[in-house]
Amino acid sequence: MSIKLNKLNKTILKCKKCSRLSKFIKKISTEKRKQNINDKYWGKPVTGFGNINARLLIVGLAPAAHGGTRTGRAFTGDKSGDFLFKCLHKAKITNQPYSISLNDGLKLNSTYITNILKCVPPEDKPNNDELNNCSNHFKNEISNLKKLKTIVTLGKVAFDNCVKFFKLEYNLQTLMKFKHGKSYVLPNNIILVSCYHPSPRNVNTKLISQKMIVDLFKKVKKMSTT
Image (cartoon, rainbow, N blue to C red; front, side):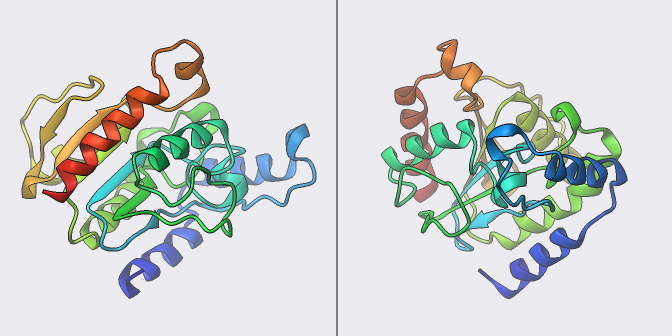
């Protein structure tokens, strides 16, 4: 990880701009759910992680209450992450098919993973002030990924907020609507790809399958290396 990105992550970890989110993190980290009652929660903002030379950026909306907020790493320790990393491993983007803790040996192949919002919001619904406060962190992450070719957003809300960020940042007028597998060209020839969220609900209702997500990431991996 670069010195600049490491410095950014330290800034993110200390951030307490959003009092509602800070209070909520403290609440869920002390009033633990039954299955995690003996776990020590991370209880802080969750930074991105991965390869500084990443050509692929995977973006969610926010850390999960008992996933990233508990383990300290995005998409780690919850069922969405379990499904996602099985798919990423099959697509040869990770060295192992699971992500359970900060010290589990996970490595990403030319990939960086982050969330637009670094803190979990109540009911997974951030307000505009919270998104605006965090947008500078997201901007700095992207600016540090000098070799970035492709961004995959997981879920419509992450997609919409990523689009909103780029429209404000570059004054874009392009109409971009969420559709699984649809791609758009952003400034600097970065490709934005929309993907269904790897949530248990989407898996159980068969909106997505492992093959469907693996195929998308295999395609995205090729796009990122050309």
